[in-house]
Image: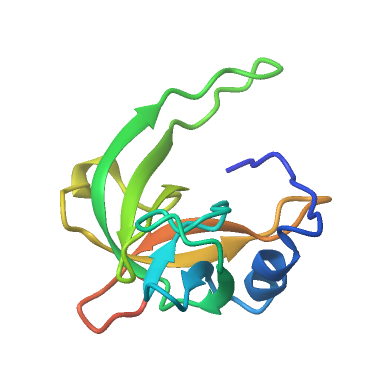
Length: 139
């Protein structure tokens, strides 16, 4: 699986610092008690402007998905990409590649654990891995 590298900035530094240790960081509003996605500038529920970074569980469930066909590159066939929308246990939805989930295993409610991969020359990027009943990602 190839991912284009991303570069951190001041607004995303806490997210990538957490990702480097395998921790999903989400935005949290202390005044409302609501969680928001990492890119949020205001609370996505109340529009409060007091967001701070907090460690999240990294657990969620698959809401929906799509299969993005791979494009041949340099005469080599490319793998299709499974991309899912995952509702985190805290509430926000994340769009994640699901690199190890077979299309036949996709279903609404599939338990997902956020994991991280590091593309060459970039920061750790979140991906989703199917969880076993014990909670660990399937290997």
